[in-house]
Length: 158
Image 1 (cartoon, rainbow, N blue to C red):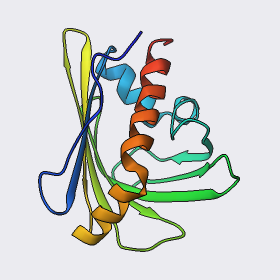
Image 2: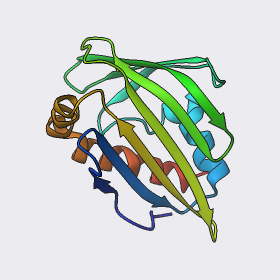
Image 3: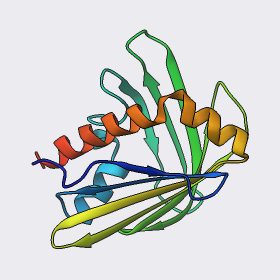
């Protein structure tokens, strides 16, 4: 199945980035794809990137830890803590990078299902406008579009 819409990226405040995309799948399936290591390994990251470590303790206070490997062999680690988990509609977690410490980002992901299509909205609140702008300039646009397309393709097979 194809996705219903392209990824929308907005910057509603000087510290936020909002990613929004509609998927042709139930929110239960989308939630599972966001929180199940075996599924995340099949879509997470831009084309050519591989999620080589995916640890998730999906509960309030639980930790998560991902390591992706880029096509050039460089590994990038991310980690955080879950602050809110409401299956299948909302996840709030922190996110930080292992090789770069600009402070924690707070990520709120919501899933709204209408007519068997799920709108995923992910709002990242960065520690500063400078950090937000660095992330935007680092290729967030293309990387997120590719990653969410991989998610759409996976959802079409589930």
